[in-house]
Length: 234
Image 1 (cartoon, one colour):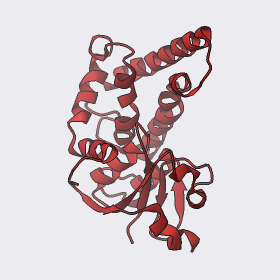
Image 2 (spheres, rainbow, N blue to C red):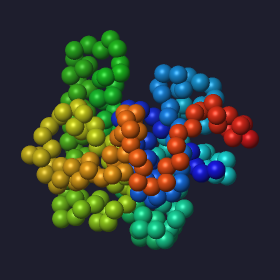
Image 3 (cartoon, one colour):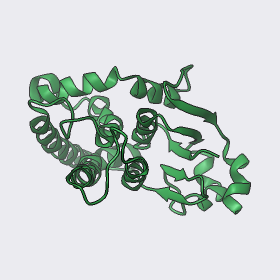
């Protein structure tokens, strides 16, 4: 059976793993994990004891969690493909470095704004502090990414799974309406516009929004969590 990607909604970082699977054109299934319901289901704890997404159920029954681990696994699985990498090479090291930055810096930069939205009972001063912290952290990341993209089309020069990951987390810049991307970070703005038109990105967006769509790769359909019980118990 092809791998199964457990993905969360909405604005989830698992978005990037869907894009990666589409770009790689590998056969795969999806399992949608809702915050209310599935993340309280003891069955999902067999997928990820931390009750988070994404997670990838491999064809041998092993399970990987965390976007960085999943994307590196996908890149190594088919090293001769345009998006693949061989361990021990410069290309491998650069992909590791970029994914680590996107995960530890860019993804984490949004933590204050997530707390602002999800935490109840905050004082006005606390809300203002979280907003300022989030905006400053995100601005630093946008400035760095803008510099990387000056004179190149992709983060590493050629398209990589780092671009797939950023396609998911960078959406939050526009979602929070913090600043004008085109005015302040024109190279990043150009890059994000290109990503938004990518068929795999549009497919992943439609999957999140539960709107009719067609895979351009080898998507084998959704599987419900309960139907995976035998594989999870193996």
